[in-house]
Each structure stands twice: as C-alpha cells, then as structure tokens.
Amino acid sequence: MKKIRSLITYILGIIIIILLFITVKNTKDNLANKSDQIEFLEKNLQNKKSQILNMHTKLLKKNINIENIIFENGIVFFKNQEQNFKLENSNTGYSLNILKSNDLIFAKHPEASSSAYVDFYNKNIFLTTATGQIVYSNINNLNNNNIIFKTIKSNIQEIIKYPEFYINSQFGIKDILVNNNKIYVSYVDQHYEGCFSTSILVGDLQYSYINFEKFYAPDKCVDRNNEYFSIPKNKLIAHQSGGRMIISDNQMFFSTGEYRHRTLAQEEDNDFGKIISIDLFNKTKKIISKGHRNPQGLFLNEDLNILFSTEHGPSGGDEINYLKFDKLNSNGVLNYGWPISSYGRHYHDDNDDNDERYKLAPLKKSHSKYGYVEPLKYFDPSVGISQIIGLPKEFSGVDNYKFIVGTMGNAKKFKEGMLSLYFFEFDKENEKIVNSEIIPIKSRVRDMVYVKEENIVLMFLENYNSLAILRKK
Image (cartoon, rainbow, N blue to C red; front, side, top):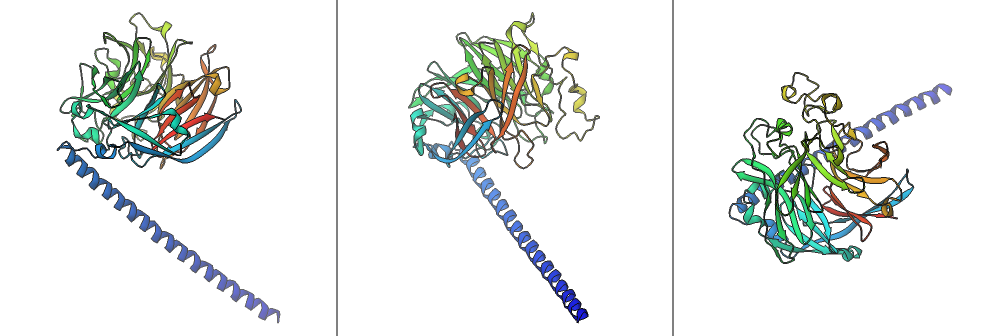
C-alpha cells in the first residue's frame, strides 16, 4: 500500500513538474510574442516620426513651419500628476505638480519628448520652445485644471533660416530671459553655411508681436567640418553650446560651450568655453572665466558676491563651480581647467589611455595642481547637469544658502542622480557643499526659475512635455 502511495505521489510530482514546465514555456512564449509586438510597434512609431520629420524638413524649405499651425491659437497644459516628497536635512515637504501638453513636438535631445525654456516676468509665465515658438500665461492660471498659453508671434523665422533649427536636433534656442521689458533668447547661430556659435537676440516685450534683432554674436564660429565638431563624423550635431543668461544691474552673464572643439576653451581670442559679461547698453564684452566644456546653468548670489555655475562635463565629470569676484586675477579671467583638467573621462573611450583625444585633452585628475580652480563638486557617474537656482529661506526653510540643481540623463541607462532634483546648502565659511540630497522625479529637468511673488519654482520637464510647479507644503 505504501509503495502504491509513493508511486502515485511520484507520478503526481512528475505531472506537476511537466505542467509547470508547460506553463513557464507558454508564459515565456507569450512574453516573447508581446516583446516582439512592442518592438514592432516602437519601430513603426519611429518610422512614422521619421516620415513626419522628413515632411517637415521639406516644408521648411518652402517656409512652412508645422509649429506655426499648432501654435496659432496658443497651446494647452492640463494637470497630469502630483509628486510629494520631504527633504530629510530640513524636514521640509514639497509638492511637484506636473502640467502636461500634447502640443509640444520637437526635442533637442534624443532622450527628450520636447524641449523648452521658462521665465517669469510681470505676473506672466513665458515659455519658449527650442524651435523659437513663444507663449505666455498669467501666473494666476496655474490654479486652473487646463491652462491656455497664448502665442506671441515674432520674426525669429526671418532671422534664423537654416532648417536644422526647426526639427529634432541640437540646433535651437538655448535659453530665454525676460528683463526690464526686454526679452532675450540665446540660440545656435549659423554665421554662414556650416559654421556656428551661440548668439543672443533681443526684442521689446510685446504680447502680439516681438521684433527681434541681434544683441550679441561672437566674431568667430566653429566649422562643422572640423574634426572635433561631430561624432559620428560628418553628422550635423551642435554639441556643447552653452547659452545660459542671467542679468545683474546692467551686466548680462552669458555661458558658452566649446562645440567639441575642446582646445578653444583655453584660448582667450574667442568666446568658446567661456563665461562672459556683456554690458547691456554698449554691448561690450569681457571674458571672466575660461576652461569650460559646456556651462548649462548660472546663478548669481549677490549677497555672497559669488557666481555659481553648472558644467556639463565628460563621463564622470559634471561639475558645480563657483566664481568669487574678488578672486579674479589681474587679467580678470579665472581658469576652470577644461580640457586639461577634469575628474571625468572622454565618452566612449573604453578606458583606453591611448585614445587620440587625450593628446590635446588629457583630463588630469587635479585642477589646483595645474593652476586651475577646483570644482565645488563633481559627479561620478555624470548626472546630465542643467540649471542651478538659489532659494530664499521662505522656500527652503533653512538659514543656510540653499540651491537646487536640475539633472537630465538617460532613462534607459539610468544612474543615481539622473532625472532628479539635487538640493544642497552652501557653507560660506568653509566654502563647501553641506546637507545635499537627491530627489528623483523621473524626468529630465531642462530649465528652472524661482518666482518670488508666489514662492514657487517653475520647471520645464523634457520627458513629460510638461511645465512643473514645485511648492513648499
């Protein structure tokens, strides 16, 4: 009897194993089929996007911009989601309200759904897409479920005529700044066919039509055919262009990248890889720092008399830097080391010290040893650093000088610190970062601005096609 029971138990065990095997196999087959279907749909979607972009490029040659049609009656943002978090160091709670739009279609980075920049002036939120469309809405409309941003027409398309500017590419607007009834936009400027720099347009702030004119343009440009400009070679990509603007008194501070022509950052006869000041009235410029790769963010703390900047560096070399105006040398130029010094490595070097790039850009692991300014902080791995803003005590809840840095990065190759907000305090006595904290928000943070009147931070999030509002709870 025991033998029969054992045999039955054994047979049942075999049957269960067989059934489990069949179930697992069927599940794997179904998942594989679904994976194939998803992959097919993704490829099909990419093909559709490519077809649309090709059509748009052809239309641009006939001076027809799809966005002009989309933006004709303004664009709409609608409430999409809310994230809540608390900072451990200050025990302060915040809510991040995300407002999504389906009207934004062009991105300036492969990992973004769309790209835009945001500013606040005279009770109005201004948003400029990376292709030069400008919209605005009153700050009080943030209380609505659906927010209509009205379109401001301009002559940008009459000034900027090369088609790559108006499609998914890294050519485009790099920042927006509204000040004293003037609106400034920085952008990748084509001096002549195939030669580019980062320049600035300015116009009187009008709500129906803005007539822009050149405010500032460098004398020199970087030719796309030089060996540094593009990777892969001969592909038209405007990497590392900078473009951030801030104004204090009658001076504009303006960051410029080196367009992958790395050695330009150490030369003082050009604007590339620099932070410069420009007089708003006579437009004279002065280089105040050099040795930058791609400065993405600027913030001036007038109380400290310190200019903070963020540096989009090589792999493992993103930086937060600070410039103390009383430390400027006799030439009035501080040197931050790029491309001689960096705590990162060149992208895609596979740890190969024989990589040709290291001959001209050795990336020494010290700044001070070679006479350069050390970063306040560097990020390894890189986080895709973007804008930096300062926060008053009313928002931060602390007495120290508080800051937020936005990060971007790649969702598919995510590393800690990407797609996040990086909060930190600055210890002015010891000149170092204290009480730092990373808050993931699952989106690339392209731009930020603090709105004193409402005690909020406005952001543009590239993965969500979204305007976001950060509030203290």
